[in-house]
Length: 378
Image 1 (cartoon, rainbow, N blue to C red):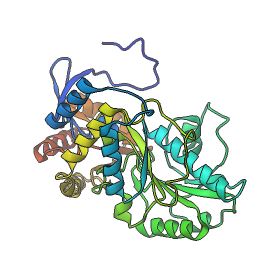
Image 2: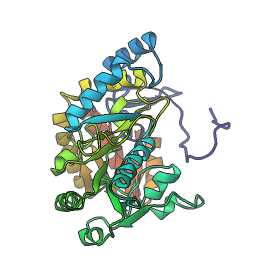
Image 3: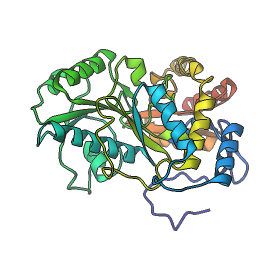
Image 4: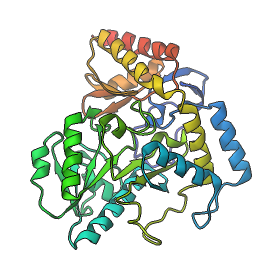
């Protein structure tokens, strides 16, 4: 299988996967791989989980799509559950993290315009990543992603992570601050809790919206339903995607009291948003993860201890982890050859995003492959 008719926008590995089971993948030849990537954090309940498959199959057999002109039970139920889990008020459903962040930007801009004309600047962080559309690239604080695609949507500024003074020095054209609590594509870099709380206080004082991008950190990945809950802050808007539907395309943003009434009829739309099959999958994911969630921090600490024993310096929260490595892209390719799928992050790190349901024996098998591969290069 060559994929010769697909645009070459990804540096794909020379492997074609045909099926998965739990935290294991299998290629065309039947070879087994331990999955420490989970589709870039998407397959939160692993591959082919029986309850997930049953929910998706049943909904697909009943009703696949009707558009947002009508209500379906899976979407209505999911919206209520997400608001309860986040402690917020109302949800907009989209298809991806980039689209979720685009909607969050529109909501913030309209909120700012309601306060004063020209109050439309969103301050994001250097080294951040918010998506690949023209607007979310403008929000992204990494020049490497900006090449070739100018001009971008105006109205974004960037300040260093951890520098509260740089944020406080912003003029009065700001409507919102956009924050990743753990910068995923930037290298799995955690925000300091004191800094995050200072940002939240500053936003409250100046009536700036606190917008938290939880596309990668959310839905249990960091050991709580949302990472902001670990930081003791309450966003005005939070985005989510990746792990919410366990492998199907779903994302969105959740508004708090300050912003729940901002977007009105006709302000925003998504043809495939709140798709009933994807929402049924997401409801199954929440059911599956509820008893698993308390073990996510323990699994993360277990992996960290093993990485430290290998002489690596792990970082991250829950099962969103990374460790500095020489030539991470080449190392990831060697690991795949030996049967372990991992990711890279930033310029110098291997990134590990296993399914939240991964078993300890699967963790051990994956770490054994990592240990043996690293030993060969030292």
